[in-house]
Length: 107
Image 1 (cartoon, rainbow, N blue to C red):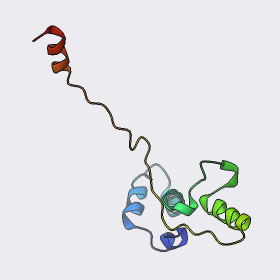
Image 2 (image 1 turned 180 degrees about the horizontal axis):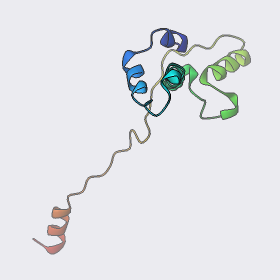
Image 3 (image 1 turned 90 degrees about the horizontal axis):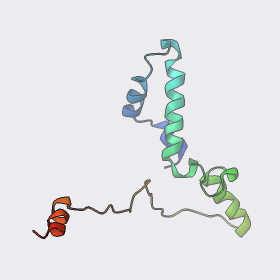
């Protein structure tokens, strides 16, 4: 989904979640604050609007895609991508402390 498509149909749950955090602000400013938070959230969720982590000055993933298309002389389309979360794929070694103690003590 493109950011504009996401913005046209915002999820009610995200608006409800953001509105619960506004009790410290005047009620008249709530709609603008909610819209800003929803827009920021969508820009983090939509792939093409996410910041480029390899070369930050180039801007978003969409900007990098457009620049690559110009360099190659065509249009670059993203057909598939894999999302990784911080620390995902790193398996943590689990140890059984009681078994290690028993092994060291000879039991």
